[in-house]
Length: 189
Ligand SMILES: [Zn+2]
Image (cartoon, rainbow, N blue to C red; front, side):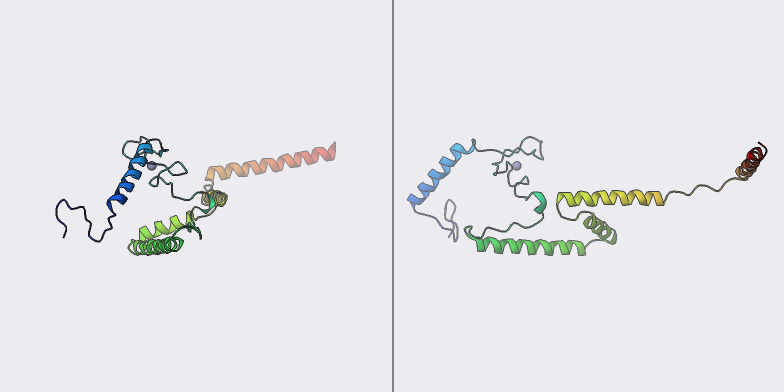
């Protein structure tokens, strides 16, 4: 039975007094040096001050993108190393996570309205995973395609007014006369 003041957790393991003493000493030792450990410098959402959680090797805590892979393979799942302790368990957990995420995504897409679905598909088309160079190439291609679409859809020049037509006729006439004059000049020179 779990009475008030009892430390016993149902089904939990509780070591002997000696084991508890060892654990407590380890925690105290850790807490003595905790403030000396490198801290995460990411801006907190609440006040934009540095986060101050314990940082991982890359200088960020697990909440601030520290676990997100970087570089060209950022979108690929990170598999545990074959020789890592509990590699099998980690692998299974990872596979389950991926499956659950895929199922969640499917559900979310199925619930979308036609407009939301169109926006979603557009985003998927323009945000393909891949290397930074490949994404830059695609971006440039889209920019050029957009430019040519704009050029092609530009308004055709307006039809000339009757006045402009008259003037054009006059210009053509004068040009013809000039040609003839130049021709005669050449003949009778
Ligand atoms: Zn952080």
